[in-house]
Length: 163
Image (spheres, helix red, strand yellow):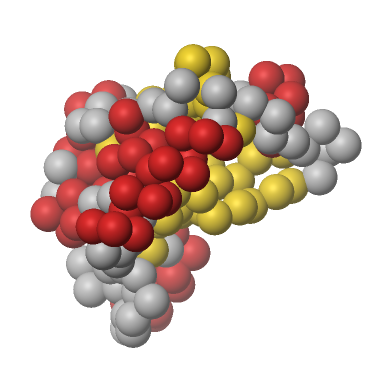
């Protein structure tokens, strides 16, 4: 997929809405060769998806060995709205707490007092984190109105050809 095609998908209003959500599912291949899919907070900076994790996270050796990842961001309504992204994870070990981590967890409903306590706890627990930065190499938006999963598109085309 060409970069301009990816940008076109990610710039659609529905994609921007999904990219503003709190949680994505990160899929990767574990060191033992089995697939993993985990929910994880994220933020979109306009060109990259940024996720943050602990420096001792079990997913890090897997991502170092095989940085190919897939992300799913979706809604919980019918019909679902789904943004699928593929890319490569780049790992950036940082001292302290990345601003993205504080931002991506800022949309949870917390009082100002709860937020301050949460941030104190985070700052006392982590001496550093790893930023997982994913630059999209492929993207597809499925809204079940104008776009469908490719297998369903194929079935609809076959039905139309049958008349």
